[in-house]
Length: 170
Length: 329
Image 1 (tube, one colour):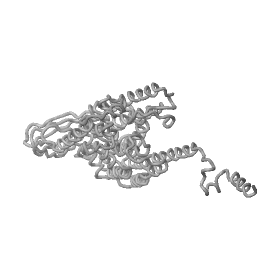
Image 2 (cartoon, chains in turn blue, yellow):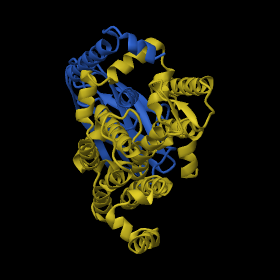
Image 3 (cartoon, chains in turn yellow, brown):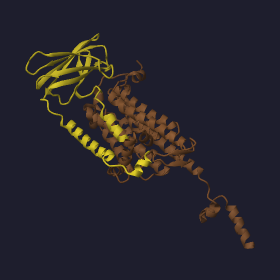
Image 4 (cartoon, one colour):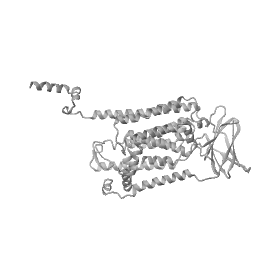
């Protein structure tokens, strides 16, 4: 029962670690270094969450003041998508978070710009976006969970209780 | 801002994490009050007689079953669990390895011990509605396939293997990076730490439900110290490694002036010393319990002593006296 509590408790946790697939690791960007992580991995058509960390190039110390903007260039050369990355929704004040929407599969160029009192800089990476597909792992886990729940339910409630059992359990 | 204050004052509101501890806290309270009431109603004085989960009244044998410290331990465990999952500890574990280690130690060692000290099983069962209570008793009854499966997969030796495997596998650089890359792997990591911790400390504390043959205090002390060498070796290896074990932390902006190397050293030392200390503390408590039990044992009447005991135990002179007297008489 306690193990079931653990499974339910932690299984229900949402991803909120400012993590994901690393795309940039301490990439020099003017006076700063920029790190970036994307989620989900691999990226698919639809929403993508981007976490950005900005540090001072000299010391590596995390910064919270610079303004950060993310620009996503579509593969077909259409107008880029500009999104401000902010601390809103970030677990710690040291991460910047942004949500992008990929409308088409292909190679997208993601550019991150940071501006602050130290100056400004940018860093970029390429992201291959694939067609959206169903999450088979998730559906498999849900199916397995249902089978286990039905089995437990059958043992719990599917058999009539004996007279002795009824008396003993109040 | 002070790092400690940042950890203490950064909280997240996640209903999906809160809901189960709240339900179990309420069931525990209801069950505890109910069992206490039954103990009182059946003419029992509070501390000398008690009603066991199966309805039997036991006099004297389990005097501390309804002690106030049990709910205190249980609720402290639940609060610590929420602290590990919802406080700044969870948030900053993405920035510092040492904070992540504190979170893992809490999930694997502190929270399970506190939860089991509260003897949650009988109280939660008594806190359930009657139909559910009967269902759970059927689930845990000897002939049920669920119980048979549970007994097999939670044998003490296997549980020890799970714990050590969880400790070693999840701290491998590649696997750890996977956990920080994929949400579900990270959840699985926390889940396996918590579950293996619960199973291990269940055997050490001998809390209900008791599905396996009960180990003596001394056997439990040996069992409790068994994972310590594995924990120590891993902690030492992390502490003295010159290279960073976890690439993820190399890419994270540094906070509170802690370098990647120092962070790794602090995390390794924490695992090595604090982790090992937790196992040792359990050993000391179990040995103390064993000695207390030995002290409480009433001495056997000298008529029932074995031949060897007659030679070495107190009362020797009485035997000598009587044997000296008998030939003369």
